[in-house]
Image (cartoon, rainbow, N blue to C red; front, side, top):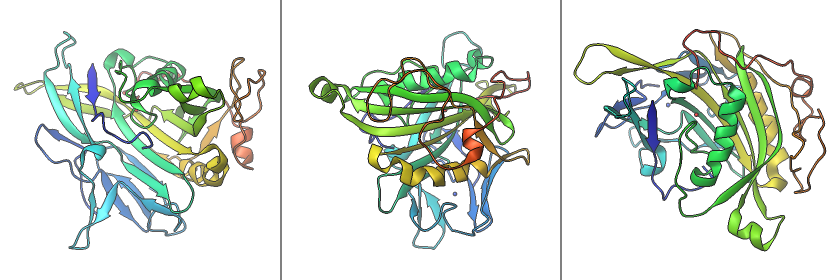
Length: 321
């Protein structure tokens, strides 16, 4: 089992060299991977993102890479302030005691739009072995439930989070299973509002969010104290996009384009079979009726007519926030 902690002061709306995503306490984490005109390649886990346009940011000139900066020497370095790193505690023998702590970068990649309010982020996060067999649908519900205490970029799947600074509520607009890079995935489209503001004005939704989680089959190795044996924890891939409701459509096409270029084991592609829960709240704040219509996203027929994928792992080391 593992637990993560992040600074309470983190903003709510929240790569060629390098290799180490995790390191011991006090260690400074390095770049998560390499970013070049041909795309992004993760340094620890076997996934890539193609870049057919040759754009330095993978998303075009309208998006700024926020998780890294160009040093005075001209190389790309990750941001290492408290907003961009976290600590992870591992219970390697399942006795309830966390024997190992590692420092990690929060994001593989994080982008902010130059003009509108859009933010796109990618994460690879180890989760507890007790969650190895959990359906992605269940893990996604944990994610949405965790928004109340952590904000929508920092949810730690399967973990209880304390209320920090402000309280938030998340209303699901639509959700559904699908595939990402040939692996099972689950997506959710939801709105986020400050609970205190909602008590004053019922339609006070401030942010629209889309999150996709997938089990790519990655494993994170942890050394069991001073012993030679290694413990293995499943890893979840998390992709997210957020924006003000009035800006949501403006960046959604770019986010879905990025998802289609994610490659696990050499296979790319993204689909979601969108379903509207009976008690879902529409983007305009009104309660909706159950339907199988896709959320108002893009003109992409692949998103609207995606095939449903099994959310259950195949027994191989798969998983993960």
